[in-house]
Length: 219
Image (cartoon, rainbow, N blue to C red; front, side, top):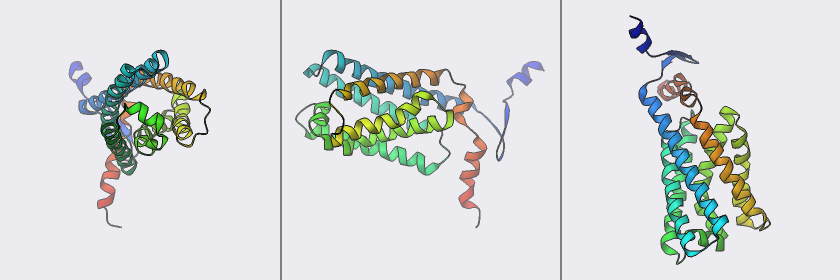
């Protein structure tokens, strides 16, 4: 009898009713966090290679592959993240798709590695930057929901670095410093997510259910 009781799911009291967390919910959170970890590792490795080895042809080609891995992992996280506002969730996914499409176009049409194209042509940020805008949306969501220091730093740092490169107001010596801070804090964020209780990332499922049914309720 005790074993049966222990196997029963925990019932949580949400804002709009009771709910339980299923294994599918937990799997989704694990996939979300795994995507963040792969994205953070790809970004961190690319940053380390660039800052330690320099922009050699081999490193630049490696950066393109790492960026592709980063984009796929970020897309997986955006597909499995729990955000109450459906419009915001879809908006971040659209930003990701626009950024990835722009990256593919730049990579195919340019005669040089993608990183070099972005470096030589800051206007490329207007396309590829949408990918990082989607990532910043995740940082903002995590900062708002969990009050994490690293995401509070990353939320303004990412647009500062991208816009600084686009409009040229950042000193050249500041860019690698900000890039390194970004990579370190991104890794810290991804690692800390693995230590967080899974239900926290699922949120209040009664809110999701309420928002899903709300449009069908007559005004």
